[in-house]
Image (cartoon, rainbow, N blue to C red; front, side, top):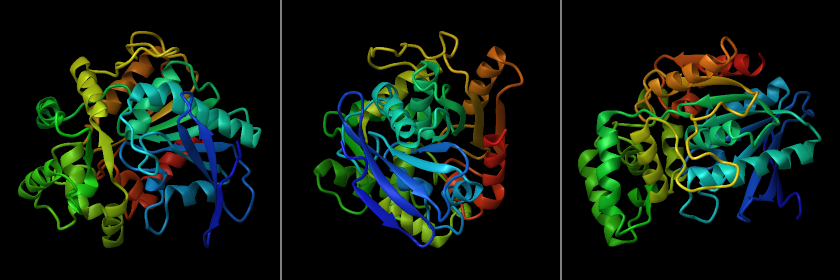
Length: 350
């Protein structure tokens, strides 16, 4: 397989697309980003959430987390795993990503760079699935993991819990996906009906994709960020960054919420069915981050997983709660470079 399909140079960075195959043969890719000078530090892998793509980490703000990492000397890699909207849609599960995607992404970076160790910054369902890989011992090369929003113990509001529990069985006979792009165009009858529901229940702004994202991922107005934390350019940019999420994911998350922690949907070689039933098979130091105002996954999510890891290895891991931030504005907020990134970089460098 060729190691690169495209090279693109921006004013600040050069990017190279590196394709790789997941363990089950699905074509995925990594975006390798470098600045004007060669990196001096180890690779860092960035892993996006559900229904978005690697570009999530490059919002049109003055300073992104990618900028900060490159300027510090890190070798930056962003993974488009099977949840990416840049790939062909599929009815994926967290198990598939944990067993097939993230281990191959890590192996690809190790092969491309020659580095035997690396760090990872993981967000939302990129975080849950990557942590599944980590606790199963499938990514031993990763020595530091910075996880945002949720990892092993998803906790949501009561309204979000009942919404996912009741809504998914109701719409499953009519669609395999929810798609935030239905806010812009409704290609089917079910899309038209759901768009009416979204328009009636979400009046917090005029951005249809923003409203659809809130409807899809929880019960907030908005769910994934505070409007006060986004500038107008980023709020508009959101329109192209959210699309299909399969109902298979929501079914699995419903089961995890019921159990109070991550559980597998399928039996996969190398993965446990219960991800807190055994001692984690990773030596990585984990830095848990959460926005204090996150209503997609409550900060209690990260607090519970931190306490779980801290009981196993006291005074090794960390928990950081950022005030006045929510879910995704931790990365795309207009002032995240001032309010969030310094704490993240400090944890990476410990």
